[in-house]
Image (cartoon, rainbow, N blue to C red; front, side, top):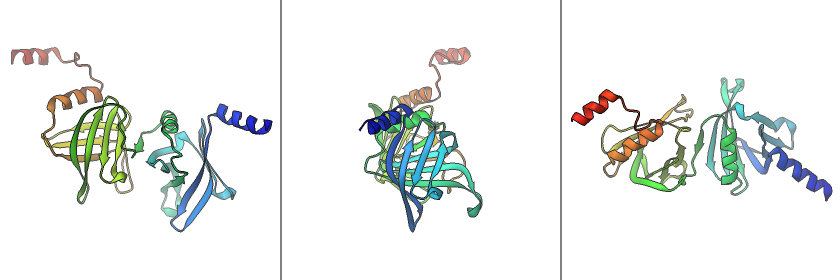
Length: 238
């Protein structure tokens, strides 16, 4: 009993989070093991040592929270067997193993932007608008929600839902008209290489220009008082 208590205490001190996981190594082969999130990185311990891996947080190129029980990790490691493509890990976890508390801890430890498909509001919703997200072919419908901390897209397709934080996952916001909005985020896929991905939306009602203006101030960290004096004088004359 003392030994068990000692092990649990050591795990808490080390900040380790352990859970049962299945690594989808190939479409035809799963590898069962234990996944741990420590202060230093991510560890997967399998029965066969050759299937285990350790990854420092600095080695994570992109962490994708696909669901509460599924994650996808893109690393910087080259796989020469696959034309030097970056190593990827897809892991299925126990039901709801990736709690919000654990997720917040990972956000603090991961040095690069994340992909969060939870589709839940970060804080109280200030403004929302029904939209259609335009894909390369077709699209999906949903709702854009704007909060104090970020932007949420709740999609009819759960895989397409996103949650973006200001200053972390969002690179910019543009609008070419009252019924269009584009959000550039720090995300990339095999189909869309590079460190940014545009999410283009058709708006089902007219965008509130006043709110969009305040959103840009917040996004880019611009103080409303920090306006060029000459521009401010021209505005007063108008």
